[in-house]
Amino acid sequence: MCDNFLCTVRAYHGHSAALIDISPYKFNHLGEKGKKDYIHVAPTPDPYRGKFQGEATPELGEKYALEVKKLIDKAHKDGRKVLIGL
Image (cartoon, rainbow, N blue to C red; front, top):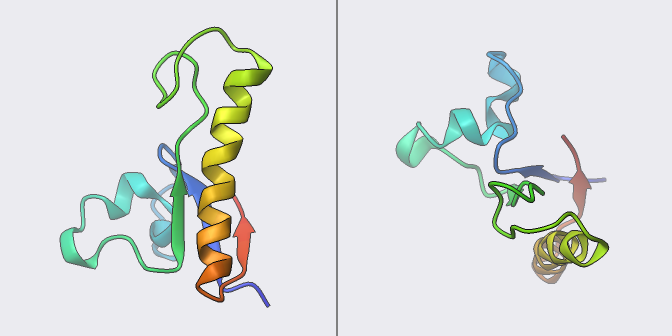
């Protein structure tokens, strides 16, 4: 069973209370009650405003993919399984 969730920095899932846990836009404004430990947040792959910028090339995509891999590897090291989500 998967007990962790991966989303991107700019993920926004509306106003449903059930989805606040997976919406950085929402949980970043909740202080200590913010991001739960089972939520993993990857950078949004955006060549203009993202963590890695430049021409949208396969190499740029690989940089973002590596960030996701790091999050998943850390979760696995901690004995967690991750659902890659929204």
